[in-house]
Image 1: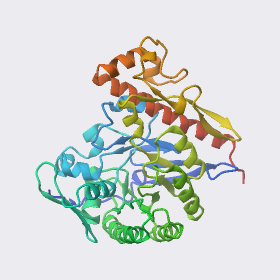
Image 2: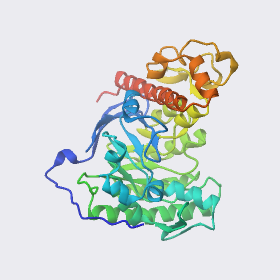
Image 3: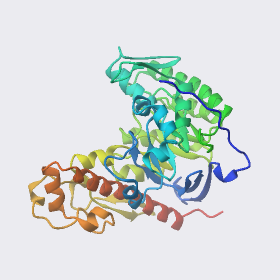
Image 4: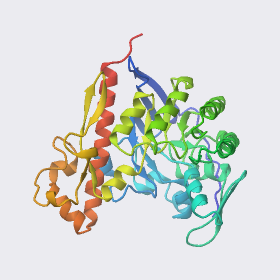
Length: 404
């Protein structure tokens, strides 16, 4: 695999191509806020959920269908997976990820750090991580691929996303302080290298200025999280992400970590929790604590496995909770025989294409007969539920914002 930067430089006079984030409203009682984010591919307001197109597609959904869910920004094309297939030269030839997958709106991509973390844990002999980066075998050809701060950033410039991530070592949730320190130190070294490479040319190969985010690591140790926060802030990146295996998987710990670091974060920079979104209530929890954007594969993965979100956001004490009504856990399991003759939509009052058009009985039939249409229709519904929660949070923040 060859990754080279062709030398396309930003035109500083074209200010409309730049990235910016502006605080519009903050809740009078909580750190929850509404931000306006401007990118070369459009403007959006937070809080907002990013569906994940890990392999340049969101599980059978066309881009028009994604837009209909209320989605403004996606996570498009993970660096590790794009390196493996189709390869960076294909993406470059096609004019970048936006053109490759026909998505015209804002896009964030990730550095490949989490995938390296997962691969090194599953196959330590075929994926070696050291201070230089990761060295792993292509899953099909056996070719050795090197993912380092340089190759990660340069690959993300070929992908062409509006927001790119510094290469990091994802922290395993092991309660091992020495492991956490080692990963944090590497992440800081790699952030410095990532920024140096990015600043040499802060544009994608297609002339659009890209925003670089640093990632806070430190596992479940408060002093390490605070130390990492201070380092990331010192690097003056365009935005700030909170990463690590624990984020999004253990919501009690996630909330606590956010509470540790948010008081130190600047008001004008975007805040991103990586991997948050196992369910709608998780979004409500992190936004209340001051987070702006988040991504997770769970909404579409749950949909494919027959678990459909069921509930509505309700106002409670100037904030929201996800009211799951009569469905335990807020997930309707479509495989159940009770839905065989049920002609109601998945969720009464849901404005998604699926709920406005199809019945539970039809969706159960598609699921049981393993038809491909099921995954797309179910994914549309789960993503729309997540975006509906975000829409309600925007409204509540605007109605209860602090006055100066």
